[in-house]
Amino acid sequence: MRVIVTIQHPAHVHFFKHAVTELEADGHDVYVFARENEVVRDLLEHYEIDHEILAGESDSLFSLARVQATYEARLLARARRIKPDVITAIGGPAATHVAKLVGAKSVVFYDTEHATLIKMLAYPFADVVCTPECYDGDIGSKKIEYPGYHELAYLHPDRFEPDPSVLEEAGLKPDDTFVVMRLSSWDSSHDMGQGGFDDPVEAVERLEDAGATVLITSEVPLPAELESNRVTASPEQMHDLLAYADCFVGEGATMAAEAAVLGTPAVYVNSLSLGYMRDLEEQYGLVFNFNDDNRHARSLEKAVSIIEAGEDDTWNRRRERLLVDRVDVTDVIVRELETAVGTDPDRSTAAANAD
Image (cartoon, rainbow, N blue to C red; front, side):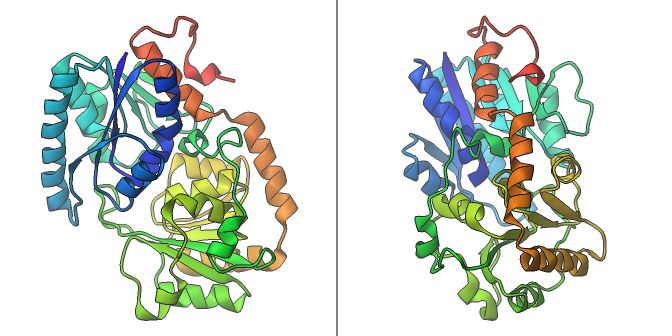
């Protein structure tokens, strides 16, 4: 079959990278299209994924609308030439619209309940919407649930083993205590009006006072006094760094979930609450959600307690329990794409029964 994969965020590269390889190995033709967003291009080039960039970055809601329109128009032109059988995306308004126009099936993967605009633009046009079981929302008969999280498409132990050389790259020693911190830009359509830390500088000082080196990855310019804390590791090494960190503290849900499935406790500091983040806290105790007005102070208290306790065995045991319950999500991606166009004859039940 002919498959179009659309990429609009660095995490989408990771989510689809193994599926692209497996689909091509199965003899399918895969076409990857993307728009500029942080390190999307760098990651696609690093993983040697053939691709075409269709649109640039945006820096506001207004420019996002313009960039998205450009992206969708160019995707339609490519799809008319390729004549795909299926188009897939995370979220995926452009994917679902273009699929309808060219007579292809559309398979959307999503885990963000509060992204109202994306859901409104994508879900009515999608043929299949795949979500984690913990997704909080009624999508109707097109919804297929699976027992996993997006991050297990690329951080399941069958797909990923951390490289300890990242510590030296980051200027760390194996026995150093360190925290990875993520600061968000709040300019995506579903983040407008939300917030995380009250004062990143004070947050870093608290963590350093607890004995941790703080390494920051940020979507926004850093205050001058935090510039020396910026992560120097390359983008493709971030998961190695998260795997060896003593704690993740940040405003980004994706990185918090990545840390959690790697067995690194994650302190999520964000006014938004997400189903998969609650699940990772309530079911496995690997995420600690701080969404209320006092989130800054309370989250730092929790992070300091984690650093000072140093209980690696606790987090490893919780991760092992998670891996028993959850599946390799790349298997779900490949199966759902093949099923959408009838090339997976063995599938008889929803992906929620995957094991």
